[in-house]
Amino acid sequence: QCPLLHTILFQRKWRKFRRDAIHLDISESTAVGERFSLSNAVDPDIGSNSIKAYYLSENDHFDIEIQTGRDGSKFVDLILKNPLDREKQASHNLILTAVDGGVPARSGTASIIVRVLDTNDNAPQFYKDSYNINLTENAPIGRLVVKLNATDKDEGSNSDIIYSYSLYTSEKTQQTFSLNPDNGEIRVKEMINYEDFRIYHMEIIATDKGVNSLSGKCKVKILLTDINDNHPEISIKSFSSPVKEDVPVNTVIALEILD
Ligand SMILES: [Ca+2]
Ligand SMILES: [Ca+2]
Ligand SMILES: [Ca+2]
Ligand SMILES: [Ca+2]
Image (tube, helix red, strand yellow):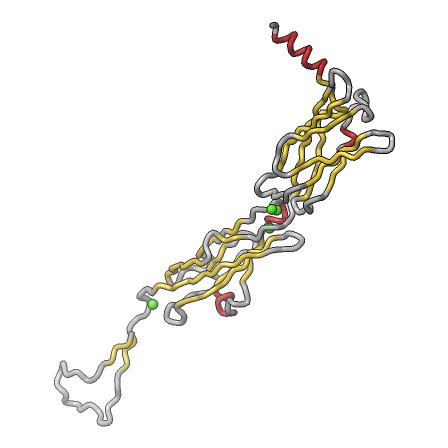
């Protein structure tokens, strides 16, 4: 049989809904049981009075429920039967089929495109819980120590992150190392000296900019490594009795070397 003729026959038999696609925006936090009207999807040519049944394509999240009005017309609602998760599936494509009571029965289909809207239900997460970083003392001011990177599975401002020191981070540490709130870069802010202080502990918080903001934490330990930057100090001990004038050359008086 001619494929083109077959297609034409097929199109005649299958009537169309008023709209080919129904677009619904549904928040991922929508409660199970919530309903969304699909009634205006029906083609007036079929006539809601004559519709006998609706069918929804098989899926994990939605059901339909049909209600009959006083005049016998049928209304169809889409009902959420399982919670949505935008981070797992951001859109759902369903097919709604309406069948009328004629002989032979006529039917039509419309696609339902559900876009899942984001809510802030994921906290920012650092790649690791803790970082140990070795840093040579006397590193120049402005030197990058580490760039932290936290990610957030949500969308838009729900996933935009601000970095900050937690209260656990001492003032001295905060004075010595700067933290860029926008990009998570930690840089040397003050002269660092191994002989003064060897380990800095910090805790960084990543907070998202969502309405009910969520946050994640990580610990950073900066260990200074020594370089030989101290000249030996020489002190000459004084004796109770002065050195005699006629002391022979090469006699050791007293030397103490401190480093
Ligand atoms: Ca989610
Ligand atoms: Ca978030
Ligand atoms: Ca989300
Ligand atoms: Ca040193």
